[in-house]
Length: 289
Ligand SMILES: Nc1nc2c(c(=O)[nH]1)N[C@@H](CN(C=O)c1ccc(C(=O)N[C@@H](CCC(=O)O)C(=O)O)cc1)CN2
Image (spheres, rainbow, N blue to C red):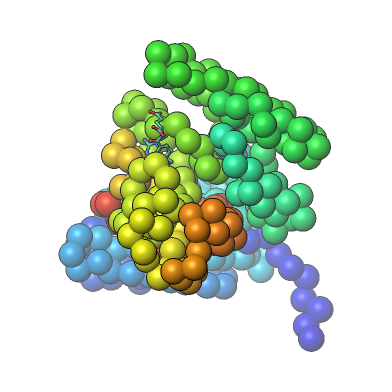
């Protein structure tokens, strides 16, 4: 068992048009910069012609200033038209959670945040109902009630974005939030708003998917975590899972079985987003789990 001290770790992610020599260029830069590669995952998507890579690194000596490292990589990035980021793996993602009346996903995320298994900071939870206030405040987290009607949606979204700005929020999680975000809001949050849909998409989009599933007599139900887009339940899928159903189960039984699937799927999606493991690739994703 080594007693080697754990060193700070950093994550480099990038995507670019696929080309020969990319891994050489990236790993050569990292070597020159004194980085030790702990983990490297890459994918070349032949259909989109895009290359994706995630590199986890440490420095055997003192870690450099991130800004200087990012600036030093800029010339390599320009050569290959790379979209890149270099981040400190320990930095938590400032996360605003949206919820309506069903609190199982919210409670699961707050518990994982509390026990340190989810690297997020939650400055505020926002809801269009009051039901979750007591639970949220029991975690010592601010709760903001922002009611929404079809006539007040624009004002409600403006209030939500005021909180996004106030708390410098990086990630918005729709933890069973039952209001459809406007096209403008979806665009502003592209790639940084995750929704949990309570069906195995693309089956049963929209409202009451468990009732739709019961009417169809399915033998499998599921949950899907996806980035939010302006087209309801059609954003890039991040993670999915399923559970068995049978003829003896009522819609309420399906709801009960589905809760655990929803919480686990959403937690994995949020964790992977916070660890910079997810790339949006058109209407799909690449996930380096
Ligand atoms: N722009 C988006 N907003 C939201 C999405 C999305 O994919 N894109 N997902 C939903 C969550 N959701 C299912 O997971 C969902 C929520 C609400 C409804 C719905 O039809 N609700 C109301 C209408 C509410 C409104 O008009 O705002 C209804 O029941 O009639 C369907 C699916 C979250 N937002």
